[in-house]
Amino acid sequence: MLLARVEGNVVATRKHPSFEGWRFVICQPINNTGQPEGAPQVAIDPHGAGMHQRVIISSDGLAARKAVGDKKSPARWMIVGIVDEKEPGVPV
Amino acid sequence: MRMGLVIGRVTLSQTVPSLIGARWLLVSPFTREHFQHGCEPPAGLSKDPSLVVYDNLGGGVGQTIGYVEGAEATAPFDGPTPIDAINAALVDEIFYSPFEP
Image (cartoon, rainbow over all chains, first blue to last red; front, side, top):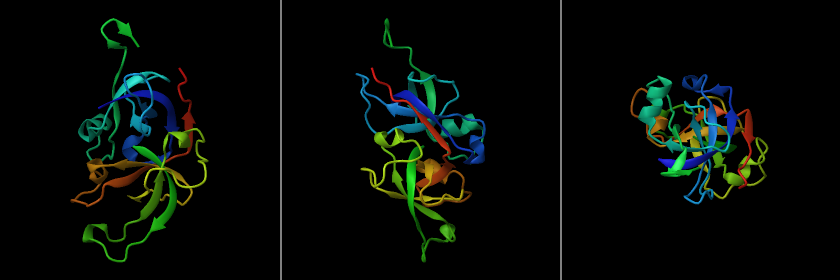
């Protein structure tokens, strides 16, 4: 799983039918100091993460397929949680 | 899912039976700099190596697509299929605002 920051979203009308109604969110993987590293991933978002929020994205396709409810969906990256503090007592 | 610019198409004359008649796109993946330009990325190829993506959505050259890599690319197929990248979305708009601390 990756710690990432939400930096935008993607609109695509023509897509695999299992993605109907799902938000495509651009997540930029970041390191512990917050610097971006690597290429941005586009993840589906069940939690409604806001802009510039830190999230945890997972590349487990099984959980993503369960979330979209389609065994044949090519879904892979999914936001599994929204970070509110990195260490105890240190708000993000 | 990763974004990429379609820079060409590939046609196979010999292939495994499960991929006969498949449509292939040659894609140059987006890096962080590409996102600032939305759907009109800077000319030229990106730093990352280009790849061939299975396509059944009808992506054309010059279009921006979202493709899925890894084992999940074989999910839409019934039988075992030897691919690891599939076109999952034809991108219309990209809204991007990088975070400046």
